[in-house]
Image 1 (cartoon, rainbow, N blue to C red):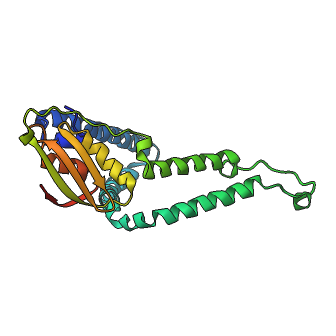
Image 2 (cartoon, rainbow, N blue to C red):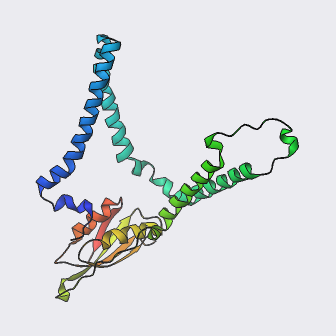
Length: 239
């Protein structure tokens, strides 16, 4: 069955989930511990025991500050900066105008009087033409991903064969957080990967998604989990 990975938390056995989630985290903690052990050895050998005592005091404080930073930065970034989504077209205009100005400055013909016979030093990497083109390609790709995600992944429909028409249910979900056609494609692509979904029609202008699915293979709660895992908020649903 093809399911979104986020839905595995409610379907997979606990033992498999524990291995899948705990092993990578344990390896990461082990690497951090080895790094601290090596640091302690070098500090104690070349600086002294007082430095080790200082590290012992500082590390818990550093971890505490880092935990707060992760909680605020990862958990709250989508909330704190969600207002920037409405400004995305204007920010893109500013970005492309800035790139145009940069291209003009880099490729414009310099007059002889501007420099005369002075020696022209080679520009640094961040002022080179290669770096300018690198940034331009990055901006263009990110713009395409934002507005036209279907270019990079096609919407797959999982075919279902319903033995009983009463098993087919239609639900209309009211979704908050969609701001462009890219959001529509993101939801359609994710929901269509669920086994049992027959059709998905999403509109960011109306803030809704109409989904037809086979109740013997999936349910409304699973569909909601997949949509919410993409960062959208479901207010209510109607059958």
